Length: 182
Ligand SMILES: CC(C)(COP(=O)(O)OP(=O)(O)OC[C@H]1O[C@@H](n2cnc3c(N)ncnc32)[C@H](O)[C@@H]1OP(=O)(O)O)[C@@H](O)C(=O)NCCC(=O)NCCS
Figure 1 (tube, rainbow, N blue to C red):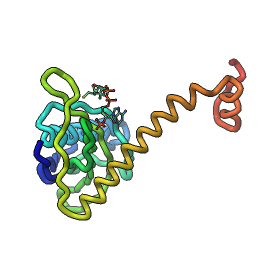
Figure 2 (spheres, rainbow, N blue to C red):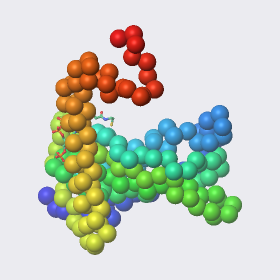
Figure 3 (cartoon, protein in one colour):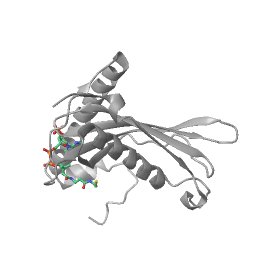
Figure 4 (tube, helix red, strand yellow):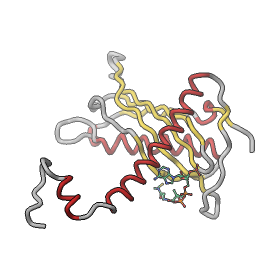
């Protein structure tokens, strides 16, 4: 299977933020932006793998600044890391006021996507052809994200199950919850 460079999967989607995307305070719903991120992630992962892909997890979505109605949101993504059947897509999001050209950086995030074959089974994806130091840094960043995400899942699965009732109640001391009815 031939390696593919990140440039092969690079995809940008630009969308105008229309009034129906706004919440009660006039800002754009986070869910609208998440849906656009998912589309870019799918486009990048399916280009890289040449297969239909599914979203497995989303890491590091933070909303730095609100997006307003009338702005043009551009999401640029590419595959930054490749495992066996999974790929991590890094996405950079900017929003621009078309009248002034003023641009703000609103989000960065990472989507893990898995390629599936026609039978719906996980399938091996091409390796990533690294062409410069920046891409090498991003690949190692992706490797760390995968490691961190696995560790987090393990901690949540195993860690909490190992707690007994007393441990759980102690963990809630000084937290803003009422455990007096348990
Ligand atoms: C994603 C899916 C194929 C994983 O199946 P699985 O049998 O548990 O697969 P594995 O444990 O072998 O993991 C497959 C790959 O996904 C990665 N992966 C699995 N769960 C993950 C998670 N929660 N977060 C990040 N990566 C994950 C694994 O690291 C592995 O990567 P690699 O092959 O590159 O090493 C399966 O859970 C699935 O189909 N989920 C539904 C996806 C979906 O419907 N998405 C929303 C609509 S698109």
